[in-house]
Image (cartoon, rainbow, N blue to C red; front, side, top):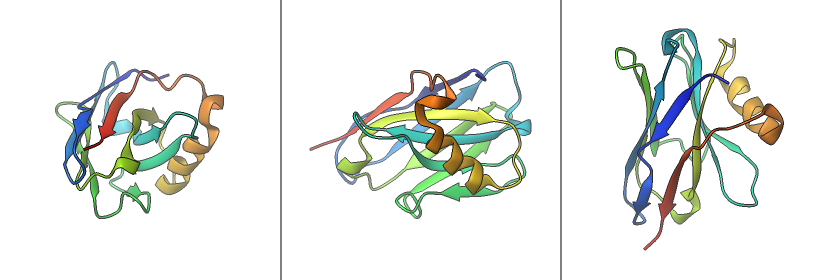
Length: 131
């Protein structure tokens, strides 16, 4: 597993915003696809948004228009800006780095579909949206 560290989660009220960070260590994000995924207790992993090294991006339908994925290459960090959060967004959010893929949507959805079968998802960062 490529080493990444998620941060930025927390407790936020409905309608609020959070910015998650994914810091990569020991490798350059310039050469990798980076994705954000989430999982609620008892639920399957699902793709949120993925960023390709070639500039392509993918957003899950629930994320489109609310979330923005971006790269800060100098800092070797990928961000996920989340706006207008809903209680349905409550989950542990994971950052995953993977090899370059010709189709970012396919990479994103296939990675989520693997779920626990892909191995360790790391610690993630907890997002709780509640009044």
